[in-house]
Amino acid sequence: MKKYISIAVTLLLVVAAVLVMSSCISADTKSVTSVKEISSDGLVNTYQIVYSDGSTTEFTIEADGTEAVTVDDLYSRYCDEYGDMEYADFLKMYFTDTVQDSDASGEETDNDSSGTVSGDSTLSAVNSCLRSSLVIYSQFVERSSSSIFPFMGSGQNRSLSISTGSGVIYSMDEDYTYIITNYHVVYNENAVDTQIDGISDHIVFYLYGSVGTPVATEEDADKDGIEDYDYGDYAIYCDYIGGSVVTDIAVLRASTEDVLAINEDAAPVVFADDYSVGQRVFAIGNPDDRGISVTEGVVSVDNEYIALSIDGTARRYRSIRIDNAIYAGSSGGGLFNEQGELVGITNAGNESEENINYAIPLEIVRNSVENVMYYYENEEDYAHEMYKISLGVTVYSENSRFDYDELTGSGKIIENITVVSTESGSISRKTGIETGDIIKGIIINGSVVTFDRQYDIADILLTIRENGVLSFLVERDGESVVTDSYTVTANDLAVVA
Image (tube, rainbow, N blue to C red; front, side, top):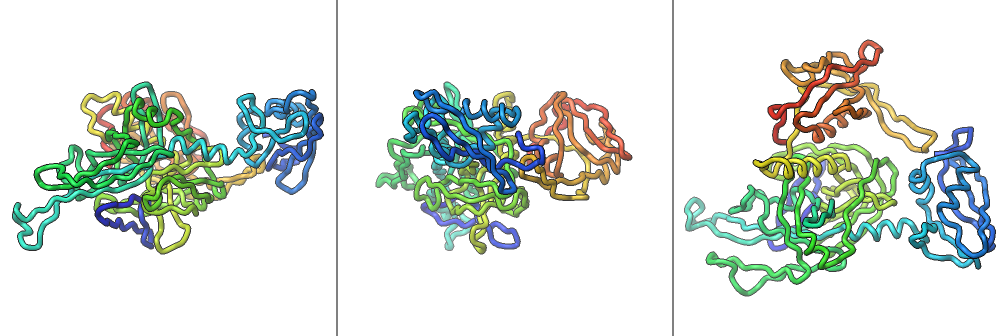
């Protein structure tokens, strides 16, 4: 949800209520929940493995008396004892709790570049995310009719409004820094004289630690007498690159030189691979325009559809429900896991229910931004919009169930995606998809993407470009079938609307 500074504007969002935009384990398949140091005498470090059923085992690592035990030492000994696993999986799955390293004398030491265990990995991850977090201000000129002459030009009054929201750094190169925020943070349906309908022509942001506040000046900005605002020395000006009201994602661009001049430690976000119910998450944003702050919560529901009206048209948005506290001004901010990876962009809240708030899932965020960037960089007549194909297929979900994986100690909902019908001349018909097929996945340019939920199909469509070669994995009469392939043409692509 964005917050208006000079003009109070309320966006009503409906979801039956009022919303505001805002692996190695033991042979008996027990899962490992943590690995942590429990004692050290300076030479021998003892670690405890805690399993999902509450049982524990221990193993030791001997230091040489001069150097601390490193993560690499711990990883090597663990694999020797319990079997090989990927190094990244070891770090991600087993170092989510506070674990401290000890030097040869038994004193606790901080993590350093050599790879010793962090004193508080969550604290480090969250603070690292602050390097990517922004406060965004969007300035608009609005025109309203006077009550005396509502239909005459002389009765039109112009005024300035400023809304505030949040954002994250998506990527940085030598020339430009690209930023993710919500579409509704930079859009105002009442704005006039804009180069792109409703999109602010005057967008600025502040990095964490260098946040400023727009201050009204006494001088008129133009002949119409609209006051101007001074954003201060920390403000970084940026341009709108593209986005869509349909996904509520917008991409902005600023000069990397300007960004690094304010803070040379500014850095882009890292996307997570996935998220799950019960996962601990941190929302970073600008609630009530009081500066960047962090709130803690969990993923309450991994997939929920909410109804929002951003441009006067009600649409359904696929969302993650979270119980983090977020308020007006938090829209566009990052939702991060304990490893500091982005799992979503916060965009809405429920005014009538406490601690029910929402974020756009990482799949939609990532696919939307990559879509915008692709067409921005490759299309001469780019119109700041997103494009995707239509399959021309109607499906329904059946046999929905929760699939629990004892190896990882987590689970997810899966369902059968069954074809009801295909449209004549459609891509689905051309590939040979038939009524009654269960769609299991898609092959794009030789890469296989499997589907667990019906929404997976809609998500993947944002990634398909002209000349992409598609075929589908389906289950037909109990047999696995790969359909015919189809090459996407320019005529298959349409603006996401």
